[in-house]
Length: 502
Image 1 (cartoon, rainbow, N blue to C red):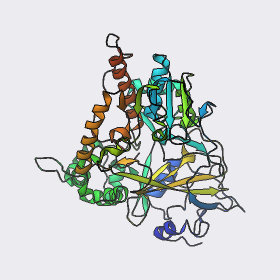
Image 2 (image 1 turned 180 degrees about the vertical axis):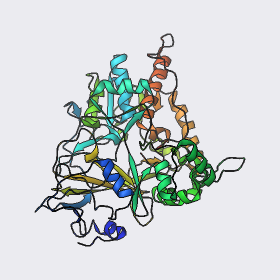
Image 3 (image 1 turned 90 degrees about the vertical axis):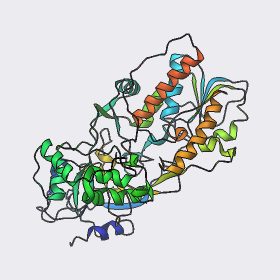
Image 4 (image 1 turned 135 degrees about the vertical axis):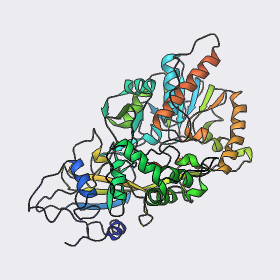
């Protein structure tokens, strides 16, 4: 069988899924079922040996060919999914029920604050969530087609340097140690990403061996910004990795992700993307890196399990806020801040969204994989999507004879995922923030990424919620010390997943 070009293969998989996909390396002995270690697959793909994107990752099984089915990523929810708690309402309880705290949103920020009030202050909490499930964008589920656990809103990889956050999250479920690694597919080969010494050796045909050599080479190819610093994302990237690597790995990806040229984006978008001067191919270097063994939904259910927490799913807060007037002691709002102030006359803030395409690869074998690692970035403009995730690589997955790859495409419409950092939105958010400060005097507090128009990694969202609870707790009882005093460990600035290179 002839192997098609990568561009042709990428464009044809959805329409003719089985045609043109090489199911095994034709040079392997007939009947061989050996699956090389993932590191070996990675190295073979990077260092030549021929083949295309999908060629090397299907073990051969005589008489059995995988079937590739493309469809939008969807999940047919039951009435509600509260992670097995069995206590969710689908409408707001009638009067005379009242609560000390009402929380809008059952994601990370809302869940953590609700848990703190219920368990530490023994206060009653009502959570109202517009979606019919808990866990926010972390929500995961078992795919009916393959039996594998998938994230409905894109992959989530927990990592943190914050001991207080790790101590908190591990109380609510079992965790499996996991170092996330990412590849980039560029110019017909896989390379480690973020850029490290091995990547530089591959793309620049170098033989760098140590940190000093790598640092010197990076200094040679970089184009430093002027005395005033970098003013946009393009300048920031070129100052870090040089013009050639910027064009190969960042420019196209940023265009696809944000819909604008990098020269039109704030420098903070790529300000903290790391470049390694060693061979470390882990995507994160944080001390604590794990995945919940039973998934994020079950983990969040543990956070929300206190009997003082009432949970309403599938109900929009703005449809019931009049019915709840006078029944909430304070309000924690974790939704989009511009939605809360929709009647203010201010323009809407802008976000980037994501669309997910699911590729179910059936009958590939229990040890069969579609790509050499969990996550692959596609920085080239010829490929319409930005990254693909193969969930079978994650720890804690059920055994399956199939696999699933989810491909992501960015756009302007849909669920709000990423705030767009530009001068217009910064100035507009400042106006919303002034309105929010006035609402705080009425007992309304804005918490989380959508309410603060700021992207948070998971650990940042949890830490932010813990800190806000401490502050509100002190304010409500000035003579009482905070629940726990912590030294701030997380610096501000751009999140490291600004281009969702997570």
